[in-house]
Length: 443
Image (cartoon, rainbow, N blue to C red; front, side, top):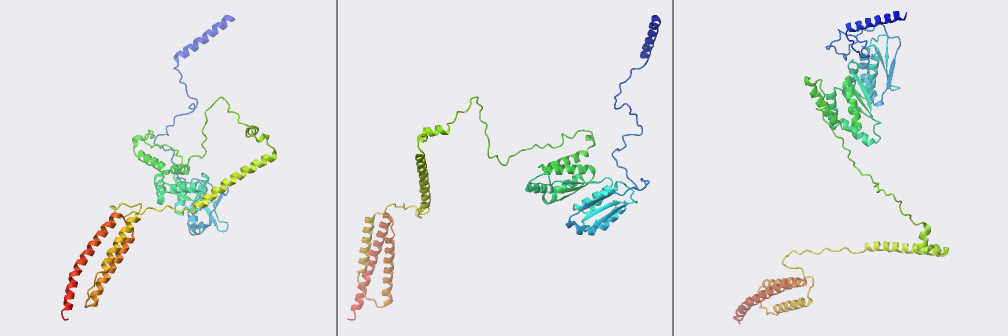
């Protein structure tokens, strides 16, 4: 029996070996693609992301239950909504949706009806009334009813706590005269409305995603101009079909973050060098009293000592206050007068004796002029004129002598005046002789 079994197993092994030699080697298949089969109808021409249009005849029966959405609106939108509401009702009626406006509660409601032929249109109608409540005009809001359009309301109020910072960043998103917002609308092909603490966006799905990223980056202190530059470069690269399957990272601009500290921290803790030894032990209160001798003093002596220290401090403060009061009565320093004549050096001290001599000389010269004999003149007017001139000259001389000047200037003035007096006396002597002769003739 054993031999028969052994012979039987040999035959089986031979058959297995023959089959293994004749069969082709089996290919190892991935478990994920085990049940996948070729799809001859799936070609490269088919766009899998294309949304097919939903037509009225596509839904065979009506909706079994009614679904509705309601939103509140601010009071400042009441007047506009009253004007536009007939257009809203007519636009939604085409899709079999009923719209209600309640001015008492301040709410808008949309409901499905038995005539609704698109089940997703109620969600689109909800987006329309939300956009109308966020100050979006109806001409833009009704575009959401299209299949390739969507909307998004981005909340930006909770990003920053500081109100001033929030206002600055929101204004940065709008830009000067709304230029930044217009640039974003052109690049993303979306309508953007910044209102209060929200940003309402309306457009294609891809553009809405870009708008949300840019808005959140702006509120997180990243300037929108950086994202605008990236979008512009991408738009140019899309035109080139050769770069369709390549990475665009090498073409996109890269911006480095700069953390510039506007204010330095007040308390800068400088780290001390590590030392294994502990710091020296500071003296205790008792040790300080022993050093000063206060430990051995009695209580009344300690009180007396404290009073003396207090009195010394008070005296020092009183003296400081008195000095401050005195400073108010101190006269300010006067600035030195700058002379016009640069040739004459300013004299610090005036010689009184020299001035006295000059005054005496001038007085003698004036007395000599007054003592000269006056000839009788027929016309009174002629006699009076020279006297007035002399008086004026004398007065001017006195005024000049009263002003303290330098020694050199005074001597020159005195010499000039002496020459003038001598010339006048010489000219007056022959005139007097002629007049005497004329008078003596008739006698």
